[in-house]
Length: 514
Image (cartoon, rainbow, N blue to C red):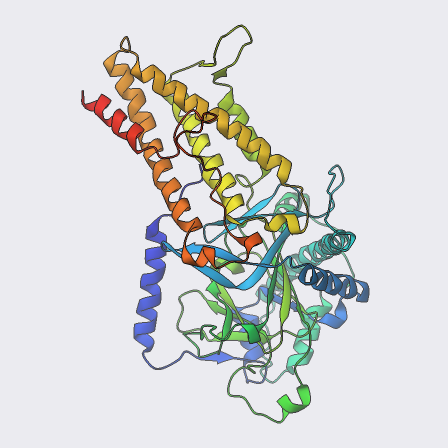
């Protein structure tokens, strides 16, 4: 089962945040926007792995199809606020999301596993609920391919620039026009493609740039009156707080396409002089993680702009999204770390665990092939993993995925069938423990292996049950309400073990003490 992220990491992060806020008091750290002297030089020296590509440099057909896709998903009510868990408490995200990507992929953030609505991939049959949703998914995989090509080129351009600057120190141009500087950066991301990539770089580049999914975001700030204020720089209201993106392949790029349904009224805005960033316009902001000496950076995002967080930028820096006035969509393309997050992976784990179940036709009832503690642990670890990382995560999100496709129905049914067989395996193991001919020393070793996994199972079942019936969960629309599934009553003859494992845990503890 995926290991829970230790509280030590979260505690360390909270301690750093408290220390920084204590140091600041009522004051605020400095940050620069395009109108400030030194903006371009700061970007070039401290944020050089952030690349912005202006909307006019992106093909018109990409804009048209992607923007229509956003509106299609909104029209068909496919964006959902996630019920996330932070420090034992549930919160509804201010941003609504939907995950699109390779069939069978998942993406986990803030203890929530999202499941992809699959975009069209050769070899997979995908039934969409509406032809327009099919077209929208096609538009996003087209954008994904386009951004992949740009990302490879941007990484190579950045590498060449670094090499050149080591040979020839850069000349500071602190008064360079902002629009020119952005156009200059964008021009490095034109329609050209690299003619040669060294062989030893090819595999690494592919692994860090082959986006396997995109997390689509939508938010209307007018519907969210209680957005948090940015705490360190006084940048205004945040749609997304300061963070590193989670669950990504190390040093992989994140590429973001941004689109506001309407641009703000520029004529009225130009009459006002803002201190800091213009609150009517959406911005992406960056800071060096836990550094109070380097000023932050706030970059305005116009309709159809793209930005790329290259290489290790997501690890060394934090970013947040500052809310504007108008509703905004974004498509955030990622190389998700999927070694334990694909349907292929979890099916493989289940099949390996079920190899220990003997179900020959000539046997009256099933039995376990091995009682070795290593086999017990492998099976019961997988038992917990499929229940809590897959089944309960999926059903906790209600019926949202059926708004777009029925693709996950069959796989989740198959996973539940394998999970039920593992329930049988646990019951068979308990039967072995109750046999009087069992040697105490061997039995105690086996019980000592099983018991902590059952305790974890009991605790997590109660946690998910509580979450599913919380006030905040009950307030969600019917098709978004969490389902506590699988769930069954103790008198359910189809289940070999009860849902509540307290009595079984107590029995095993008594056997160990006897």
